[in-house]
Image (cartoon, rainbow, N blue to C red; front, side, top):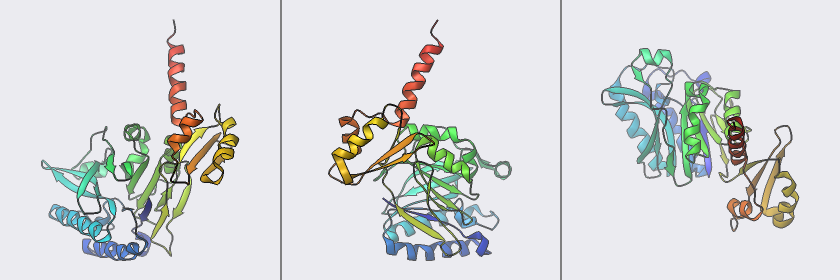
Length: 297
């Protein structure tokens, strides 16, 4: 899938009203359309970047904007805005499909103290990822990054990619989340820290002062394995599949990844053929044995 991370480039812009931010995003999408993206991630409350949140009457306008922009560009879009449900305001990341339909959402679980004082309500902790044409995709918003274990529910329910819609960059926290949970992260940030992280914690692309948005083609089937017991199989996998697969090793972390390059085969085929155990399943198996031993009387 071709993913795009958008920055609001706040260091270089001084928006005075909500419409300034909407016009900025609209112009960005005119450029983005040229690369035919599959999925675009916008920052947290992108429409309110640099301006005060005052009028809840603008919430529907922002949702309509997202619907129109995804439909025009023929791509999936994820972006955060406030929304009112049963008279309660949530900081919500919307997921829109290529037709401009809102097909899923994620509510910020951990609003800041300032948001709570402004009347923002926290979302439920156990939120399912959103079903898309690419598979299950999860999300977290800004301050949520400091409670990484709350993301596990989405990952355990199939999310291989997480949207990070945020005002602040989160820095190495994102790298650690990606590596520990083996998920891709597409980060849309207010400042020039937007970008794309692979499922081993490595930045693939980042925005800078010359580029307010970046893109990358990613393969969500790229799978992470631990070297224990599995590493001895690497040479045989290469011998069998040659250049039809790409294998990368990470020495310090004792990990390796397999990415299938030939569409006629799948990672499931390789796992079955070589009786491989993914890093995630290896940790789960080890934990079960540890608990069994721990409680053995």
